[in-house]
Image 1 (cartoon, rainbow over the protein chains, first blue to last red):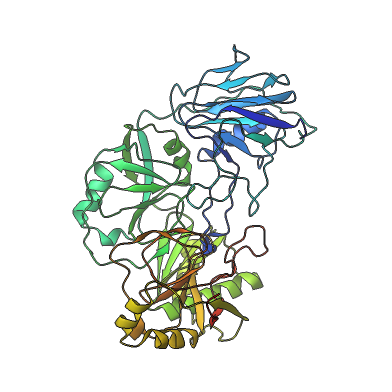
Image 2: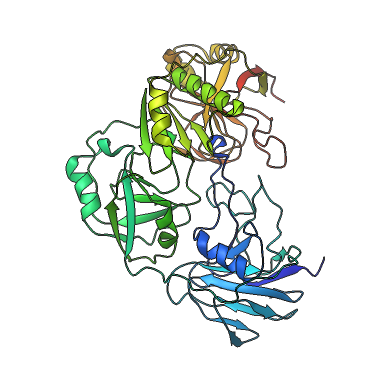
Length: 289
Length: 205
């Protein structure tokens, strides 16, 4: 095997390969997938001189440890965490040179959920429908990282990054999600619609790449008949029979049979990806643009 | 027809029937092909078509709700033939629902031309319509934890073929060896919305 590769020493709780995802296939039942915190993934790619579509690693809560077989430039962003190379602390949120065979450890998140690791050249696993993203709903793309796995790397770009450090937003202490109502807000009682945008919810530990699940007051339906399956968008707030809103994230199913009470603004979803279980959540109604 | 806004850049267009949804879907695909509609996703479903990634959803909404949608062109695409062994464990139960013999289920099912109304549930899983409403069947009371890949199954007004092994609550009437989904193939999905399908009975191997 070529030495443009990364050995996985510690896969962590859940580390996946992510890029911009595979939008455009929803009519075939294929989720869009892609990095949940898109701006963080874009930033670490920029720091190492990668193109925006290069694939990065997305960790979950406790990071991962990898060993590049050749010298590479890496950058870690998203959820803040300690980063070491062969045990020596190096900068988070900055381009760092890692010698061939050195151990890069991405530690547990100090705050937030998902750290992003860009490697110069990008993770070069075989694309599926134009994307290298792991899709946890339908199993497309590479499987989540396992200890001992080896990931191929692409050729680094000729040009180098123009920035070497960049500011990143802190993970939210309170998650404020701006929502536009509908398309099925009329399937809920007026009281439920009021509760949804006025009471406090919190992030459920059952959240994953498919959806941000919440705990809080149940939303009562006005229409109790079954909704025929219909297409759903990223950020849709679906309300399953237990009445607790679920915000659809990148690996969401392309159609759903529970009513969508509102849709979260796309700009607010990266923060949702970084909200740890227990984080208070407020849904704030805004006017459609 | 109602066009419901979804977030800032999507529309859910709701119509009265599955046939209207298929006609609307065909019309929207035609507009996209001719270049008069710019959209990232067109997702048909049971009685709706979702349009995602629009630049001016409000304008399209008012335009669509006043538009005449022609019926779906009847023979726009070739028929995909799926060889099937009618050996499913729920064949007798489906026969009981239909009030006919298992052999008659086979004859009716194989004598029907289906079309893919929409996809969902898993990549390459099509919801096929074509059977008259009197042949609707309920889902199984208890879903199976594993339905094998290639299982031909019925639920409600739909026929479906499981692209890969997964849990499922549909009534299994047969099996096909045809590969429904292969991401290394172009196209990856054998069935996409609008595809016409016939099931061709073959003997048990």
